[in-house]
Image (cartoon, rainbow, N blue to C red):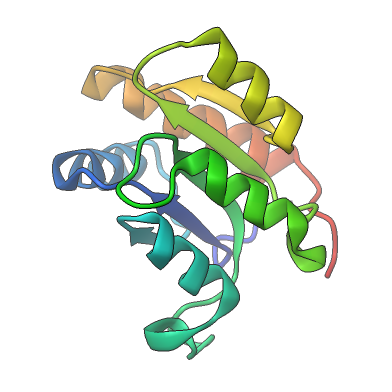
Amino acid sequence: MNDDRRTILIVEDNDDDQFLFRESWIKAGVSNPLAFVSDGEQACDYLAGEGRYADRAAFPLPVLVLLDIKLPGKSGLEILAWLREQERFKTLPVIMLTASTWPEEVSEAYRLGANSFVIKPSSAQDLTAFAAAVKDYWLRFNEFASG
């Protein structure tokens, strides 16, 4: 059952990619709020509700995280490892995103507990199709763990 008030956290350091995500998700009809952070420290702070992200009304916990692997500071794989060490985030769905396919990264992401591994769509049309697929599967049909 879709609840379009549930926040999606996108961890992406490229401003152009953030813009394209916003536009593509609008075109795909995703009405869920999108929260963006641009590095590993911000991602951990957002998820932990620390620092500038302490106000959960302004920065609600996400129901889904899209996590770029290549980030300044902590990598996406380091953030994923941290997430899975936190009891409250063990079941939080995480989709790993990358521009390249290194078999080692794919294997490591799944070993660390990623729910999906996606090559970042390279065109606006493919990004919109990806957003529509996320909407249909993760936000419409998927049941999220409580707590």
